Figure 1 (cartoon, rainbow, N blue to C red):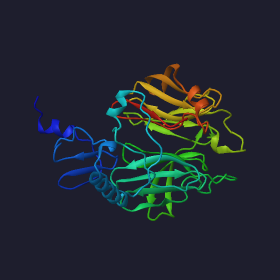
Figure 2: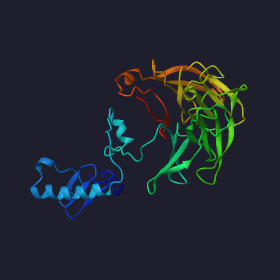
Figure 3: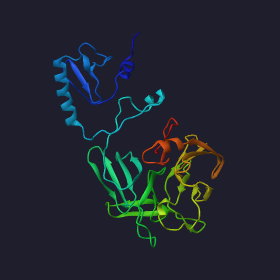
Figure 4: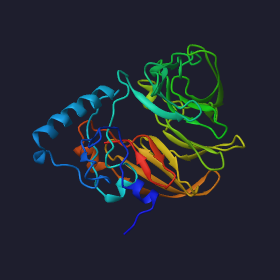
Length: 329
Protein backbone atom coordinates (compact mmCIF):
# COMPACT_ATOMS: atom_id res chain seq x y z
CA UNK A 1 0.00 0.00 0.00
CA UNK A 2 1.22 3.51 -0.78
CA UNK A 3 0.11 6.71 0.90
CA UNK A 4 -0.22 10.19 -0.54
CA UNK A 5 1.44 13.06 1.28
CA UNK A 6 -1.91 13.92 2.91
CA UNK A 7 -2.39 10.27 3.84
CA UNK A 8 0.99 10.15 5.51
CA UNK A 9 0.31 13.37 7.39
CA UNK A 10 -2.93 11.95 8.79
CA UNK A 11 -0.97 9.21 10.53
CA UNK A 12 0.72 11.78 12.73
CA UNK A 13 -1.23 12.97 15.76
CA UNK A 14 -0.93 16.69 16.56
CA UNK A 15 0.90 17.70 19.70
CA UNK A 16 3.96 19.33 21.22
CA UNK A 17 7.20 17.39 21.14
CA UNK A 18 10.96 17.44 21.72
CA UNK A 19 13.35 15.59 19.43
CA UNK A 20 16.94 15.03 18.38
CA UNK A 21 18.29 13.22 15.35
CA UNK A 22 17.22 9.81 16.70
CA UNK A 23 14.41 10.17 19.25
CA UNK A 24 11.16 12.10 19.66
CA UNK A 25 8.99 12.54 22.78
CA UNK A 26 5.44 13.94 22.58
CA UNK A 27 3.71 15.80 25.36
CA UNK A 28 1.26 12.94 25.84
CA UNK A 29 4.08 10.44 26.49
CA UNK A 30 4.56 8.83 23.07
CA UNK A 31 8.26 8.14 22.58
CA UNK A 32 9.69 7.09 19.21
CA UNK A 33 12.99 6.07 17.72
CA UNK A 34 12.52 8.19 14.60
CA UNK A 35 15.73 6.95 13.08
CA UNK A 36 14.36 3.40 12.88
CA UNK A 37 10.63 4.32 12.80
CA UNK A 38 10.31 7.29 10.45
CA UNK A 39 6.50 7.16 10.28
CA UNK A 40 6.15 6.80 14.06
CA UNK A 41 4.15 3.61 13.81
CA UNK A 42 5.03 2.19 17.22
CA UNK A 43 5.76 4.08 20.42
CA UNK A 44 8.61 2.61 22.49
CA UNK A 45 7.36 0.68 25.52
CA UNK A 46 8.54 2.11 28.84
CA UNK A 47 9.61 -1.29 30.18
CA UNK A 48 11.69 -1.95 27.07
CA UNK A 49 13.80 1.22 27.17
CA UNK A 50 17.55 1.01 27.65
CA UNK A 51 19.16 3.01 30.42
CA UNK A 52 20.38 5.57 27.88
CA UNK A 53 16.89 5.87 26.39
CA UNK A 54 15.34 6.34 29.84
CA UNK A 55 17.83 9.09 30.63
CA UNK A 56 17.16 10.83 27.32
CA UNK A 57 13.40 10.60 27.79
CA UNK A 58 13.70 12.23 31.22
CA UNK A 59 15.70 15.10 29.71
CA UNK A 60 13.11 15.54 26.97
CA UNK A 61 10.34 15.51 29.58
CA UNK A 62 12.07 18.29 31.53
CA UNK A 63 12.08 20.44 28.41
CA UNK A 64 8.41 19.70 27.71
CA UNK A 65 7.39 20.56 31.26
CA UNK A 66 9.23 23.88 31.05
CA UNK A 67 7.29 24.82 27.91
CA UNK A 68 3.79 24.09 29.21
CA UNK A 69 1.78 27.11 30.22
CA UNK A 70 -1.10 25.34 31.89
CA UNK A 71 -1.54 22.37 34.22
CA UNK A 72 -3.42 19.31 33.04
CA UNK A 73 -6.41 17.96 34.98
CA UNK A 74 -8.74 14.98 34.77
CA UNK A 75 -9.09 12.69 31.82
CA UNK A 76 -11.28 12.11 28.77
CA UNK A 77 -13.48 9.02 28.97
CA UNK A 78 -14.29 7.62 25.54
CA UNK A 79 -17.48 5.56 25.38
CA UNK A 80 -17.74 5.30 21.59
CA UNK A 81 -15.09 5.17 18.84
CA UNK A 82 -16.88 7.95 16.92
CA UNK A 83 -15.72 10.39 19.58
CA UNK A 84 -12.15 10.09 18.32
CA UNK A 85 -13.14 11.97 15.16
CA UNK A 86 -14.23 14.93 17.32
CA UNK A 87 -11.53 15.04 19.98
CA UNK A 88 -8.01 13.79 19.32
CA UNK A 89 -7.03 10.66 21.20
CA UNK A 90 -4.01 12.64 22.37
CA UNK A 91 -5.98 15.62 23.68
CA UNK A 92 -5.70 16.66 27.31
CA UNK A 93 -7.72 18.96 29.57
CA UNK A 94 -5.84 22.13 30.49
CA UNK A 95 -6.77 24.65 33.17
CA UNK A 96 -6.21 28.02 31.49
CA UNK A 97 -7.75 30.26 34.20
CA UNK A 98 -9.23 29.89 37.67
CA UNK A 99 -10.48 31.74 40.74
CA UNK A 100 -14.02 32.54 39.60
CA UNK A 101 -17.21 32.53 41.61
CA UNK A 102 -19.64 31.20 38.98
CA UNK A 103 -18.32 31.12 35.41
CA UNK A 104 -20.86 30.91 32.57
CA UNK A 105 -21.56 31.67 28.92
CA UNK A 106 -18.19 31.18 27.16
CA UNK A 107 -18.01 32.70 23.68
CA UNK A 108 -15.08 32.73 21.25
CA UNK A 109 -14.47 36.05 19.50
CA UNK A 110 -13.00 35.09 16.12
CA UNK A 111 -11.78 38.56 15.11
CA UNK A 112 -9.95 39.14 18.37
CA UNK A 113 -8.95 35.48 18.76
CA UNK A 114 -9.98 35.48 22.40
CA UNK A 115 -12.45 33.79 24.75
CA UNK A 116 -14.86 35.81 26.89
CA UNK A 117 -17.07 34.46 29.69
CA UNK A 118 -19.29 35.67 32.51
CA UNK A 119 -18.72 35.52 36.25
CA UNK A 120 -22.35 35.96 37.26
CA UNK A 121 -22.16 36.96 40.97
CA UNK A 122 -19.17 39.22 40.34
CA UNK A 123 -21.05 41.20 37.65
CA UNK A 124 -18.07 40.83 35.32
CA UNK A 125 -17.00 39.38 31.98
CA UNK A 126 -13.43 38.17 31.64
CA UNK A 127 -11.33 37.66 28.54
CA UNK A 128 -8.57 35.15 27.85
CA UNK A 129 -6.19 34.52 25.00
CA UNK A 130 -3.14 32.34 24.64
CA UNK A 131 -0.71 35.24 24.42
CA UNK A 132 -1.78 37.57 27.24
CA UNK A 133 -3.71 35.19 29.47
CA UNK A 134 -6.57 36.44 31.65
CA UNK A 135 -7.86 39.99 32.09
CA UNK A 136 -11.10 41.87 32.78
CA UNK A 137 -13.24 42.41 29.69
CA UNK A 138 -16.02 44.46 31.25
CA UNK A 139 -17.71 45.42 34.51
CA UNK A 140 -20.60 45.76 35.07
CA UNK A 141 -21.87 43.06 32.75
CA UNK A 142 -25.48 42.43 33.76
CA UNK A 143 -26.51 44.62 36.70
CA UNK A 144 -26.14 48.21 35.56
CA UNK A 145 -28.25 49.72 38.33
CA UNK A 146 -31.46 50.18 36.37
CA UNK A 147 -33.37 47.52 38.32
CA UNK A 148 -34.48 48.68 41.76
CA UNK A 149 -33.52 46.23 44.48
CA UNK A 150 -31.54 43.99 42.09
CA UNK A 151 -29.30 41.28 43.49
CA UNK A 152 -26.13 42.49 41.79
CA UNK A 153 -25.75 39.53 39.46
CA UNK A 154 -24.16 40.13 36.10
CA UNK A 155 -24.42 38.51 32.70
CA UNK A 156 -25.01 34.81 32.15
CA UNK A 157 -25.30 33.47 28.59
CA UNK A 158 -23.44 35.34 25.84
CA UNK A 159 -23.67 35.04 22.06
CA UNK A 160 -22.70 36.90 18.90
CA UNK A 161 -25.65 37.91 16.72
CA UNK A 162 -25.54 37.45 12.92
CA UNK A 163 -23.88 40.88 12.66
CA UNK A 164 -21.11 39.83 15.04
CA UNK A 165 -22.32 42.01 17.93
CA UNK A 166 -22.24 40.75 21.52
CA UNK A 167 -25.68 39.89 22.99
CA UNK A 168 -25.94 39.32 26.74
CA UNK A 169 -28.43 37.66 29.08
CA UNK A 170 -28.35 40.26 31.87
CA UNK A 171 -29.49 38.62 35.09
CA UNK A 172 -29.47 41.71 37.33
CA UNK A 173 -31.23 43.92 34.79
CA UNK A 174 -33.61 41.04 33.92
CA UNK A 175 -33.32 41.64 30.18
CA UNK A 176 -31.41 40.72 27.05
CA UNK A 177 -29.19 43.51 25.77
CA UNK A 178 -26.63 44.32 23.09
CA UNK A 179 -23.18 45.74 23.79
CA UNK A 180 -22.96 49.00 21.84
CA UNK A 181 -19.72 50.51 23.14
CA UNK A 182 -16.69 49.40 25.14
CA UNK A 183 -14.20 52.26 25.24
CA UNK A 184 -12.61 50.65 28.29
CA UNK A 185 -13.44 47.68 30.52
CA UNK A 186 -15.20 49.78 33.18
CA UNK A 187 -17.55 51.76 30.94
CA UNK A 188 -19.59 49.39 28.75
CA UNK A 189 -22.73 50.73 27.10
CA UNK A 190 -25.75 48.57 26.30
CA UNK A 191 -28.91 48.77 24.26
CA UNK A 192 -31.92 46.66 25.36
CA UNK A 193 -33.03 43.99 22.91
CA UNK A 194 -36.03 42.64 24.82
CA UNK A 195 -37.06 43.60 28.37
CA UNK A 196 -40.42 42.05 29.25
CA UNK A 197 -43.22 39.68 28.35
CA UNK A 198 -46.62 41.34 28.10
CA UNK A 199 -45.43 44.16 30.33
CA UNK A 200 -44.02 41.89 33.04
CA UNK A 201 -40.30 41.69 33.77
CA UNK A 202 -38.41 38.54 32.91
CA UNK A 203 -37.09 36.35 35.73
CA UNK A 204 -33.40 36.06 34.80
CA UNK A 205 -32.61 35.39 31.12
CA UNK A 206 -30.15 32.52 31.05
CA UNK A 207 -29.12 31.19 27.65
CA UNK A 208 -29.89 31.83 23.96
CA UNK A 209 -29.26 30.77 20.39
CA UNK A 210 -29.89 32.19 16.94
CA UNK A 211 -31.37 30.11 14.14
CA UNK A 212 -30.12 30.25 10.56
CA UNK A 213 -32.61 33.04 9.77
CA UNK A 214 -31.47 35.35 12.56
CA UNK A 215 -34.34 34.67 14.97
CA UNK A 216 -33.47 34.46 18.66
CA UNK A 217 -34.54 31.67 21.04
CA UNK A 218 -33.88 32.04 24.78
CA UNK A 219 -34.66 30.60 28.21
CA UNK A 220 -35.83 32.51 31.27
CA UNK A 221 -35.63 30.45 34.49
CA UNK A 222 -35.86 31.89 37.98
CA UNK A 223 -32.31 30.91 39.08
CA UNK A 224 -31.12 34.50 39.15
CA UNK A 225 -33.98 35.84 41.26
CA UNK A 226 -32.65 34.36 44.49
CA UNK A 227 -35.29 35.07 47.10
CA UNK A 228 -37.05 37.50 44.77
CA UNK A 229 -40.50 36.85 43.36
CA UNK A 230 -41.21 36.23 39.71
CA UNK A 231 -43.35 38.90 38.06
CA UNK A 232 -44.36 36.54 35.25
CA UNK A 233 -45.12 33.56 37.48
CA UNK A 234 -43.47 30.82 35.40
CA UNK A 235 -40.19 29.79 33.81
CA UNK A 236 -40.28 30.25 30.06
CA UNK A 237 -38.76 29.39 26.69
CA UNK A 238 -39.19 32.17 24.13
CA UNK A 239 -38.86 33.04 20.46
CA UNK A 240 -37.92 36.59 19.45
CA UNK A 241 -38.22 37.13 15.72
CA UNK A 242 -36.41 39.49 13.41
CA UNK A 243 -39.74 41.30 13.20
CA UNK A 244 -39.39 42.13 16.94
CA UNK A 245 -42.29 39.83 17.86
CA UNK A 246 -41.90 37.92 21.13
CA UNK A 247 -43.63 34.53 21.42
CA UNK A 248 -43.78 32.22 24.45
CA UNK A 249 -42.99 28.68 23.31
CA UNK A 250 -43.24 26.76 26.59
CA UNK A 251 -44.04 27.71 30.18
CA UNK A 252 -44.19 24.20 31.63
CA UNK A 253 -40.49 23.38 32.04
CA UNK A 254 -39.36 23.33 35.66
CA UNK A 255 -35.87 24.75 35.06
CA UNK A 256 -35.16 25.69 31.42
CA UNK A 257 -31.46 26.32 30.99
CA UNK A 258 -29.29 25.67 27.92
CA UNK A 259 -30.84 26.03 24.48
CA UNK A 260 -29.75 25.16 20.94
CA UNK A 261 -31.16 25.05 17.41
CA UNK A 262 -30.27 22.28 14.96
CA UNK A 263 -28.29 23.29 11.88
CA UNK A 264 -31.25 22.61 9.59
CA UNK A 265 -33.56 24.83 11.67
CA UNK A 266 -35.91 21.90 12.26
CA UNK A 267 -35.30 21.04 15.93
CA UNK A 268 -35.19 23.04 19.14
CA UNK A 269 -33.32 21.55 22.13
CA UNK A 270 -33.77 22.77 25.71
CA UNK A 271 -31.95 21.56 28.81
CA UNK A 272 -34.11 21.13 31.90
CA UNK A 273 -31.96 21.45 35.04
CA UNK A 274 -34.73 20.33 37.40
CA UNK A 275 -32.83 18.06 39.80
CA UNK A 276 -35.70 15.60 40.26
CA UNK A 277 -35.77 14.80 36.53
CA UNK A 278 -32.79 16.33 34.70
CA UNK A 279 -33.10 16.00 30.92
CA UNK A 280 -32.79 17.49 27.47
CA UNK A 281 -36.04 18.10 25.60
CA UNK A 282 -36.59 18.37 21.85
CA UNK A 283 -39.29 20.10 19.80
CA UNK A 284 -40.08 20.18 16.09
CA UNK A 285 -39.85 23.70 14.68
CA UNK A 286 -42.77 24.07 12.25
CA UNK A 287 -42.57 27.82 11.66
CA UNK A 288 -41.29 31.08 13.09
CA UNK A 289 -42.34 31.02 16.73
CA UNK A 290 -44.11 27.68 16.34
CA UNK A 291 -42.99 24.37 17.86
CA UNK A 292 -44.69 21.01 18.32
CA UNK A 293 -44.00 17.41 19.33
CA UNK A 294 -42.33 18.15 22.65
CA UNK A 295 -40.44 15.04 23.68
CA UNK A 296 -37.66 13.62 25.83
CA UNK A 297 -34.41 13.66 23.89
CA UNK A 298 -32.00 12.61 26.66
CA UNK A 299 -32.68 11.50 30.22
CA UNK A 300 -29.80 12.60 32.46
CA UNK A 301 -31.20 11.10 35.67
CA UNK A 302 -28.62 8.32 35.97
CA UNK A 303 -25.75 10.69 35.17
CA UNK A 304 -27.05 13.05 37.83
CA UNK A 305 -27.29 10.28 40.43
CA UNK A 306 -23.77 9.04 39.67
CA UNK A 307 -22.19 12.49 39.69
CA UNK A 308 -20.28 14.05 42.55
CA UNK A 309 -21.57 17.61 42.18
CA UNK A 310 -25.18 16.66 41.30
CA UNK A 311 -25.10 19.01 38.36
CA UNK A 312 -27.88 18.83 35.78
CA UNK A 313 -27.84 19.57 32.03
CA UNK A 314 -26.83 23.18 31.51
CA UNK A 315 -25.38 25.01 28.51
CA UNK A 316 -25.57 23.42 25.04
CA UNK A 317 -23.86 23.85 21.68
CA UNK A 318 -24.21 22.09 18.32
CA UNK A 319 -21.19 21.76 16.05
CA UNK A 320 -21.17 21.99 12.25
CA UNK A 321 -21.69 18.23 11.97
CA UNK A 322 -24.80 18.32 14.15
CA UNK A 323 -23.25 16.81 17.27
CA UNK A 324 -24.79 18.14 20.49
CA UNK A 325 -22.54 19.02 23.41
CA UNK A 326 -23.95 19.89 26.82
CA UNK A 327 -22.40 20.54 30.20
CA UNK A 328 -23.86 18.62 33.09
CA UNK A 329 -23.34 15.83 35.51
